[in-house]
Length: 631
Image (tube, rainbow, N blue to C red; front, top):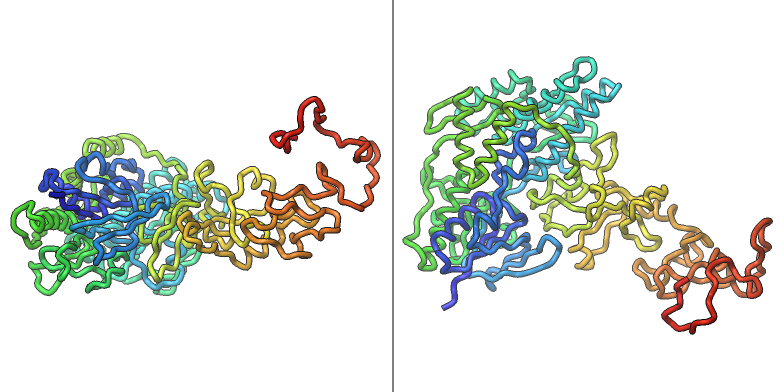
């Protein structure tokens, strides 16, 4: 009898716990496949410490292959689920498409950044849901402080050293608390002009910080933030975001180069395509985490609306604690449905308390309902994280110890660029790569690679790191209407090049889009630049040959096909780059055209009796096809 096939989508808190528990329960009696865009599990609660330079990025990741040896890992992102055919279609990290069949499907795709209809936010803000976003924020903050320290303009210095965080929940509060300490440490080593100090602002429409927590913990966090110098503004949010700053709901304009969006999360858009009953974007399930009417389909974590049996009529909130516990119950019920475990169990929970790390020895915690602050809360908070992490505990503890006795290293690694981490994306755990495969976007997606802020310093667009795939700038080929990669040497020669994705110039297309035959976007500005950059008639390089990608340029137009009887001749058809233009160095003189007189001091006329300078053709060897074109 063949073993049943269990497919798990997503390796966040819910998906990872489901896979680990199922591996233990089935003991090889089932095929378990885990589909995830990355090869690691990310411990999200410690991400603010990565952005603040306390922990190295690998400390908050756990290898899926090493920690789940009996689970087959497939790298990719789910695109479509055929429930009737029990098949999931996905796209791999290099643009390849594949499908996976299943007997039981567990959806644990997690969540993405929550967007609000505020002008400019999708283009100028960055979220904080994945490792690439944390790495980008660390580099960006470091760069702004360094540029401010070298600036002679007090106004520009103040704008660069103003950091706005929207959302005073767990993530936003920790980002602002750690960020203020991080920038203060930088300024102590490299003071700003005129005694300026970095300014962090924490905004939220809620009446208090951490509104989901106990009022005592909220008051503790608020007091620590204000003592540290964070400008906490409750009942205030962003009305509009621009490249130069943000307009607040109270009418004030704050000049800044940094807008961190931590207003909350929304379920992964994948579940919306199933056509099943939903509750505020989440898939409705019963207390056993099973989709009604679909015995083969389970859902857990942020994509599932799980009934809260402790509070009838409500659903469990989208938190890491619930997702972790969802995963265990989902695994037990999946195994039970296959006859590989005990009886099914409903999901019930009991809050053990909450912890918020505020940096240094400061924290707010209420373990088992006991309210703590200061050093005791800090000890409980870090102890909880060490106990909850499925790996890397020793390395995390070592980094904490080193941070306590050594100064932090504030350097820009330049690994993640602004356009690589757009706010409106259904896969925040994966950084966009120029020329790489695209990711499915929601129907209302307003951004993508390049829609986020593309200029970190004085409007200069970010570029992919040199030497990386897709790092070359782009150039519009005459007549093609699409952007083509251009090498760095060409860029160095001063030839006009289009900017990075989203800059208004040529746009890079992903491999998957290219494979699907989707035309690349081209703006009016792109066409205008292309027209100005086309080589004119009788210029070296000429125009692309006919029947080449990009089509034939219009005849008798700048950059078009030279007239057949005019100097320059017709390029050779169907040849890459065509035949060198006639009457050009190395080319054949146009027929029936007068040979121009050589300039003074030249070797003389070129013709049958006066061979052109260059290699001498040997006459002692046969002239076969293999020798053609060698010179």
